[in-house]
Length: 379
Image (tube, rainbow, N blue to C red; front, side, top):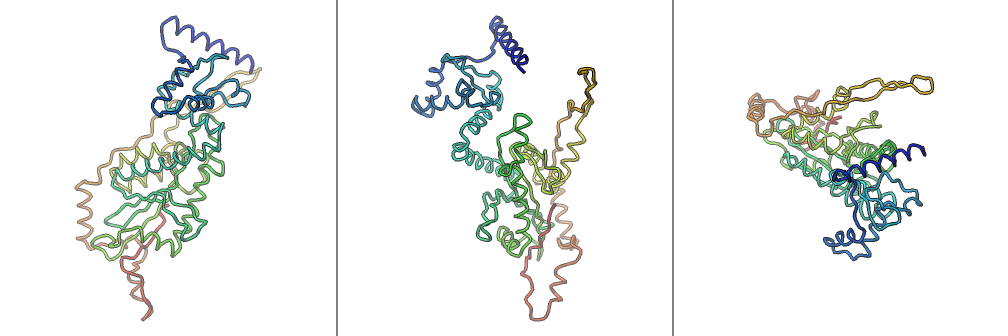
């Protein structure tokens, strides 16, 4: 390890001086006083506060003493001087901003939880909500279930899609926005009980609640009171989805609840043009389709007289989705008109017609209300 560090340091110095000789931009050097003065202009913070912030986000002797991970920092103090060095590529990448979050979370976890994490989580919910609503879906954020059971989690996002020939498809979404990982040990943090893994247990609790009479009544209250036109009853298909800031299912292959990261979901929603059947199909087959795109290769090298071989991943095609035309397509309206003209009914997809069961109810016993909700699990 010492030899590696010395080699890396020499390489870094070489590139720094090479950039200087060729009048090219390498690392960015900033005088601390200049950085403090510039940083306080917009927020209007006093210099003492700005310097305190820099103390947290600059890697220096104190950071070394606290055993902070240098790879998470974008800013470094040059020796004992008052000059700050910035990684040049962090100007162009979100990595620079994410590193700030990593550093604060690492050095001041309580402050990060109290003052940053919750705000990021709320903004994340609103961004995902806006993506659903942009495609014509109704989305309710932060839906509380505590009036039914204080132990139940809130529903981060309840998405409703009206399906004129069926009823409604409802997506119950749990959102988790941990700081995106940098390397292997960061990836493993999604398994922590308060991270992404928690979303699956929350989804299971909500799924059990929805299957009860109280859960059915809760769903019905979220739907239009008049139901869908032309029919005296409808079906509600309930699906569950975990949406994350980065993880797309790594370590969660055995879970029954679907999982997707928000960037993939946003791209999918734009391509869907409001076609919920298309969205469900893509999410349901996502793992298989992603696996098809992975190009693997065997790597070999010699070490101490032994041949070491391992499987690696090479360049892979980007997973994308076809553009669908649905929300305002003439084919969609023609399908609806034909179904109504044929006298078909949403209950035709069920093994038996609930209306016939209601008709055979014991005389004097009240039947279910009209426009009844028939919940089906979309998983």
